[in-house]
Length: 231
Image (cartoon, rainbow, N blue to C red; front, top):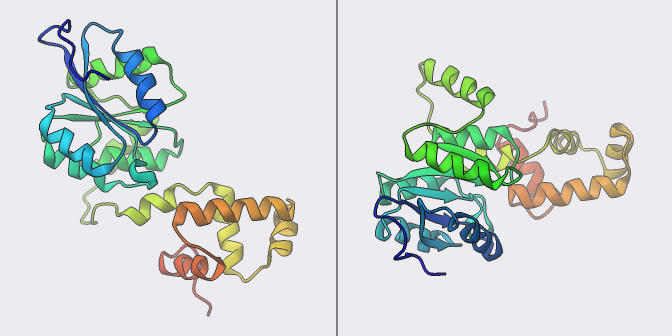
């Protein structure tokens, strides 16, 4: 991809694409380069290169998928803004959990666009965020404003909060039952699902939390207060 086009106007919005999948980046380049007021100045699929480009390429807008290096990494938002304080970050995500979106905004993202949205929506979000507006849906905006209006001395969200936020309600139920000491068969009966489905849920949970087996999951759940310690 040619990062800078000589045919682009001098006042074009400079965009940096950060996504772990090269095909996604190529598709975004094809989509955005059709717009005469948008200019792709770089792309990357891993964290270190992303930070270098944020510093060197002087982007106005950074389109960011949090899963760089194949790992959910909320700290990348802070690192990108440290590398380029004037850039505005739009989270481009396939994760539909509102908690992830909310935390990204709290950490400095100015917009959230889901990968299920249209190309037209993405272009509009870029233009609005570049103009100084925030691009998030009304429900999320209400939650952000509510939280900002409350005095808080809490520390910023850490990576574990992001990992836990990826869990679906059903997966949280499975974790709770694991904490009670139930086996797969018992969990299946309790939730009225098959044992195969339970195993699928566990595989997903292990991947999202970065644990390798049932024992590590139980320890993780106790440590992060997903389940109560035995009396």
